[in-house]
Each structure stands twice: as structure tokens, then as C-alpha cells.
Image (cartoon, rainbow, N blue to C red):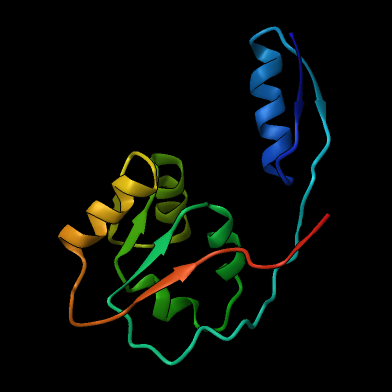
Amino acid sequence: MRLVVTRPEPDASRTAALLRARGHTVDVAPLLRLELIAEADLGAGPWGGIVITSANALRAIAAHPRKAELLALPLFAVGRRSADAAQAAGFAEVLSADGDATDLARLVAARADRGRPLLYLEIGRAHV
């Protein structure tokens, strides 16, 4: 089967390699390019935890000046891949919903500190 992968790099190449290993013909045509802002304003905090829906969010904070502060917080991830990336990035407490956005919302509702706001990390600037 011939497939087109439109994810941003480096994810597009990884996905294409997995599909090729399964016998597919794959073209890579990323529709987005991620642009990381090294010193993005995260707000004042303090936060009760961090929520991510993509491992790309972890790439965004890899060199952020407040990275150490963020690593000390519990992190709620939508899926196992994002959770594994969070652990590899140095987060000590990582909880995975192992599902979708609904599962993540349930996990956060059940486990987050209700007395403090959460920081949702996402990639917010994309170029087509």
C-alpha cells in the first residue's frame, strides 16, 4: 500500500520507517514545521502539575530556563509514548492515561491537586 506521512519531523521519519518495515511504500510530506521558542513565557505558577498531549511539548522545554522547576512537578500524559518521553526527559512522576483526551481528563480529575492550577504544554506556532 502507498501511504503519505504528514507529521512534522522528526516524527514523520520515525513513522515512515515503521510503515516501510511493514512493507508499505511511504512518502514523507510534513505539513507542519515545529518552531521552538527557547524562553517562552510559562506564567507565574506555582502549578500542581503539567499536562501534555504530545511528546513535542517536551522538546519545547528541553532548553527552557525553568526546566528544573518543571521536572519537579507531576506530569500527566495522554499516552504511553508521551509518558516514556517525559520519563526520558527527567520527570520523576509521570502518569499516563494510556488513551485519548477523554482518558486524560479522567486521569487529571482523579489524581491532580485540585488546589493548584495545571500547566498545559503544547506546541503553539506552526508553519504550513
